Amino acid sequence: MTNYKAHRDSNIDLLRAIAILMVLTYHIIWWSPLFPLWFKMLSVPGATGVDLFFILSGFLVGSIYWREERDAGEVRLMRFLKRRWLRTIPPYLVALALSWFAVSIVRQTKFDWAYLLFLQNFRIEMPFFAVSWSLCVEEHFYLIVPLTLSLTRRFRVVRPGLLVIGIVAPPLFRLAYVSQGINPTFGFYQTATHLHFEGLSLGMALAWLNIFHPAYWDRAHRAALWAIIPLATISIAGALWSREASYVVSSTTVAALFGAVLLAVAGRRSIMGGMLEAPVRAIALSSYSVYLIHTLVIHAGDMLQSRVPLLTDGAMLLFWPASIAACGYLFYITVERLSISIRDRIAPSKFGGGALAQQASDAGAPIARELDHQGAAT
Image 1 (cartoon, rainbow, N blue to C red):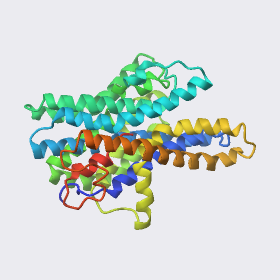
Image 2: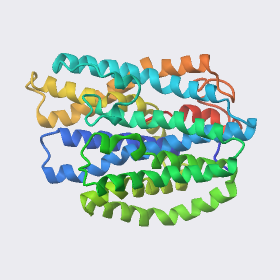
Image 3: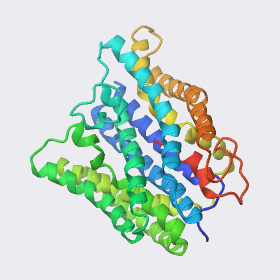
């Protein structure tokens, strides 16, 4: 099989849908008083949906970057960055404004200007909009990695080594913190960018393999099928290790697992039935919007429950998903799609028409065109 097909990849859509559903399930179960602690602990793997997003974002953004460099000889860095920023930052700013408006009323929380620079994930504690830490990691990646690749354009032999460093360095940083006796509670030691580059770097490395070495990509695909079960076993075992050991290695083993899953399914025949493709695509398309606003909806639902007797704890298990889906889709069509449209007018794709216009592109269209739309941020 030659490298990754041009049209929208339904398997990538499925992985993106799984990622957001994992995150939603985890947060809803932990917020609901219906579930005992042992059951909530069983839902903790749902938090790794963020790690799956990292792998997907690294792969999809990497595919766009490597394809442009291969076909055009170089990547126009400012246009590339402009397209990334216009794609991700406007929806983020709207969600940030909504979140701060809510906490300023409920808790009289002062605004932290670090949120405008995507630096809140370096705070010891994040005062609000806690899920935005992963967006900080991605925005830093979108800036640092393309800039580094641009600076090494004449020394491309070093690039695989740089990607390896991006994969290996995070667990070494985490090991250094544990060795100092630091308790890695949520905040800096769980959210700082340098602790979470392995998934994005691995995804970009897989994109490089696919674009420049398709024969090796096919061989790696066959190997990945055999690696999934062992990596899943190691990842599950990681959750049973000591807290310190799990902190050091779990993100890396989970990234390896999701990298193998991506390698096994990307560009292959759809693993879904035809009836599932439409709803899965809808979930995948709105996943960024849903991620941005879902905790705000959960908190709003919790406040509403205290005022509406009919909203029992059991009813909230239906109310929350329905509200998140409705609000997420509304945010997608009113904010995210507008951001995409503006992006396509200000910074058109190197490979032709805008992402919205190219949703049903023909099979011969360039891969990067569809991936530019499919590869939205977390």
